[in-house]
Image 1 (spheres, rainbow, N blue to C red):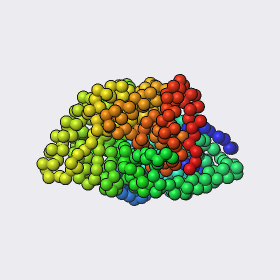
Image 2: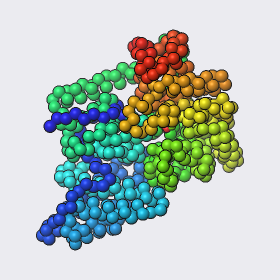
Image 3: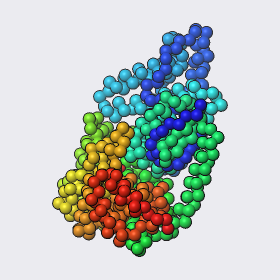
Image 4: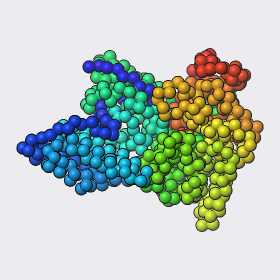
Length: 575
Ligand code: PEP
Ligand code: MG
């Protein structure tokens, strides 16, 4: 029966497909016993499921090419090893044969046994490997419950799950998944950022999804409005097709803007950089005329791999980006692991009670200087192939910047002495995302060659509102007077000291907020290439002189509603 579930649109795009439901960790399977006469048939059913999953994973491995194969291959190999682990399989055989449990229930018992072993481990990294077991068990469970004809990969399916890890997304897309719905999650999470980068429609926070949707149900999802229609009727299908056609039309229109400058109506050029997470992002950024890469989040290289990438692997990845940008500046951010980017890295991060306030970003890099040196060596070597700048995340003081600069200087010396070509200069900038850094900036601006404001985190720390917490709703908003004041302050310090300031948080990717950012004095934005043309279009509709003249009215707004009113009266006219 038709039902509409609502969530939050996190990566735009529309998808129509069958649901594949993945229940969270504990497999909720009731105890079911079988007769002695059914044992052989049950064993056969289980072995057929194992063979199907093996074939599915093999097919996926074959389909991965280039960087994806490099990033996700190890992850798949590990799952293939687990699937062949006699410990896992013979345990299930015994439970079916001796315990006379159904294959599904045997799977659950075996999962719970292994989970108990893993939970008892001291090492946090090893403990977290239960996630891999869960994924393999989840695949087996799905295979046991599918008809043979449906065992062919996931092409055209929409995954419905509680959460999805960032590293899993590319794998899902390579499998043919056309959209994802999660019961929890937030549009500011790194999973959401990566989904936008992969242009994979994503709806998060659809709380009812796991209860209402069953495997095989047909779904229509809209990654902008966050609506999920279960068993759509003819009108829903027509609306879906209309939205898809409309999106294509808009895309064609935007494509005409490819060669147009991001110039305001009064003739001021705004520098549009791209946030790039994958090599595909980099090529799109280049094709759309981005000024350069304003934010390359290196942690995605780590998240996709089960072991730490060594200097050579990092160097090759960075060089690929630098070469693809053909002489345009590439801003490589040093590792920002921690908080919601802690899974699957091969790095044993400690369990922290409050990870967003814990050992993340530059704090982790300065504690693990071995990692930082390796990364800076790789960046320094990549700079021999084109201009590169280094961006330091989660800075809260000048000491941190000075420490990174000192290590970079040592690394540059060493790399040059070894005979590598490097750029003559590597500018070093600070991410301004910790309120203390924004407020203390005049005291350490001399340690920064440029600034990049990370509004995603800045908003979360200023407003004490977790960026991934779905229940906080509108409490997490960049449209807060405090956020605007801090932004204005950072821009002023940059201007006074002649240091370029970019905004690279998601606020920069929203065309509706362009007038606000320009009014605050920003002239550089860095955003995902998916919305680059929309933002360029919005810039072309703005009059910078007028907006600057109206900045004081904006800064006088006392509430979100006041800021929205200011924005509403300045909606950019179409060009
Ligand atoms: C930010 O915090 O705004 C930012 C760009 O960094 P990330 O989203 O990777 O934390
Ligand atoms: Mg950040």
